Length: 126
Image 1 (cartoon, helix red, strand yellow):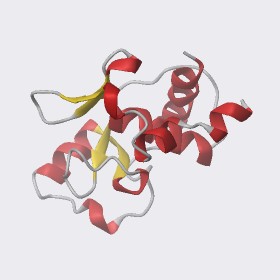
Image 2 (cartoon, one colour):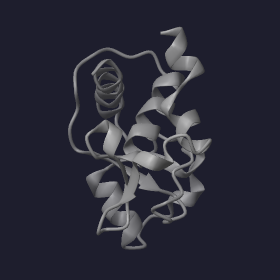
Image 3 (cartoon, helix red, strand yellow):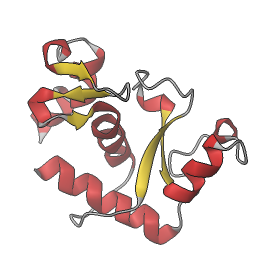
Image 4 (cartoon, one colour):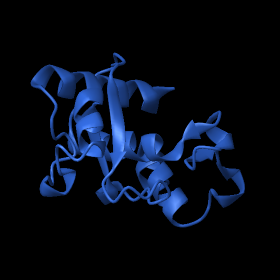
């Protein structure tokens, strides 16, 4: 586990060490070939959120990771929020301004937050 902290995915991405594995899909999102083409913003968000919470190992469903500034290639942890699909849709329909929230768990019920925590652990273990 210590190596994971020292050589985190987020650090290696932000330092450019993963550049050879990163590609942009046709929707404009960065993906990582070295992680089976997973979305970079999801990998970073889950790793970042896992540092902030104590978590278990069961996956969750129904949550999306939102780019606060709406720049699909700005994958810095401070620009990412976990939201329900409903809240995310409302943000993009201008019904809710996500920039008013500092909490990456904004809009989540305690159960959804717990599910997210379980999924983070699952991703980090696999």
